[in-house]
Length: 158
Image (spheres, rainbow, N blue to C red):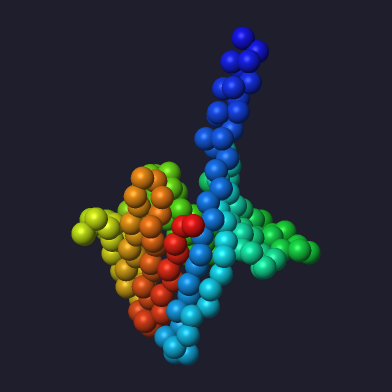
């Protein structure tokens, strides 16, 4: 009985404690250059943590707030204070947990050529042209955010 309990506990922890590594490219059209970063997303039972290699800042996302951390400080903020991080949190939940909660208030969802395409609402369309992503067997092949100024961010899961 104890062995079964231990096995189930480890199994449940592994379901909620998943780590995904990724490579991010941020293309800056005005400079015609790209900046590359390596990062990871840790999925825990009650929160999601996003951090980057060689950068001191990380973000911990909870259902109703997030925490911005660096080496010296930790700041608790509301999503209303940083709409872009609220959007990022909802996007991560949609991609990795199939939770559409709140994503449809920002985007119209379409499936085009085996990709999910998110067309922004009027509020976001001033800065974002569209977002595309493709998943195969729960692995993110790519996520690409196209901005109006012709910049883009592309994320590929390792």
